[in-house]
Length: 225
Length: 225
DNA sequence: TTTTAAATGATAGTATTACTATTATAAAAA
DNA sequence: TTTTTATAATAGTAATACTATCATTTAAAA
Figure 1 (cartoon, rainbow over the protein chains, first blue to last red):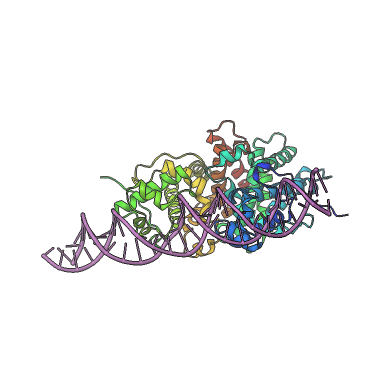
Figure 2: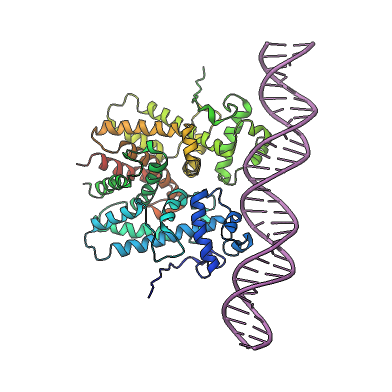
């Protein structure tokens, strides 16, 4: 028996559920690949349609626009991450080890998860690193927020925030530190790969050093005083 | 006598120097205002032209495209910040106080600096908070980086990194911490104003709490062990 | 099995965007 | 005064981000 992993997505993110049809899954798979290849700005539904040998109009039946598709992908990523975290921290007692595992998941490149056929997590990670923040850095944040589009991000912050509190129940900024861990992990990864001189990491592909930096940052703050 | 503040900008960022002509300065002033109002995605040279009662073609004589204009504005901001920092930390002996002033400058809303007529820093700060990272989160980062477009950001990181080393000469990640201070200050500010539940700050406009969080984060890391 | 409904394909069309090009005019420098 | 330079006015183009229509294929219901 094959176990397939599925995340319940916010229904307002799509017009037709892409996980339920073959075409929908092809849209998801190839949009990650194409955004990875072209960057979000140059990515268009027309190019995606050519890639999957379908038509622009068909893609528009699944997603209202490419912005919602990006939010979908990002939300999916955070949902998947939350699952990975609860899976990987399950049965672990030491809250410090839990938090370290989370930092690893966020900062290190990810291998493809075979339980999701239609998404290649190995590509998804760099896509989120480079494009993820564009989901909320818009004039419509408030609107999108009201539609709960960022719920998976918030849930993840709460999850991490609670583990921070397990480490130190008196810590004053659990949610801010949680969002900081996520964001720092991602943009330090981006800087290391693309703007090396903004970091202190010795080699261009040494993501382990980001983990070291983050561990120092996070635990000295949690354990201070 | 009036003292006017001027930043030497990378010449490859523009086709014609916008600081040297009346029209150029109007382009800068109103592009900040219009990006603030519309967001970068909806901002176009056509709308800007209407705003300043000029033409699209005239704006294109100053900037190759709107992306370069955004980089120009962002670079200008970081140049201005570097100047503010050296000004405000001048004559201060205590490196801890220096770093605290920097955190204040980055995280708190800024008042208009009367020494620059053609840029309203009060608007520039939220524009950089929301749009600044779009300068480098593109497929052309490498190209833009080779043209030294991000030099002011790097210079600022070096400046802050050196002050971090004044605080603790053995600190292992001065540059990573410097870029982290900048980025965290900005996106925590964004979250506080737009996605409140991702932070722990009690009121929506209490930027002082961001400063507290950042001080805790930075100094516990620098002073650890 | 037939009918019917739903999903997709094929095609066309539109307003806007991100430019480039050309010519005319006004202002400043030689 | 002539010449250069900057700007305005206008036109044009390919691409983008859609919307709309109708035909065809596929799958589900009767």
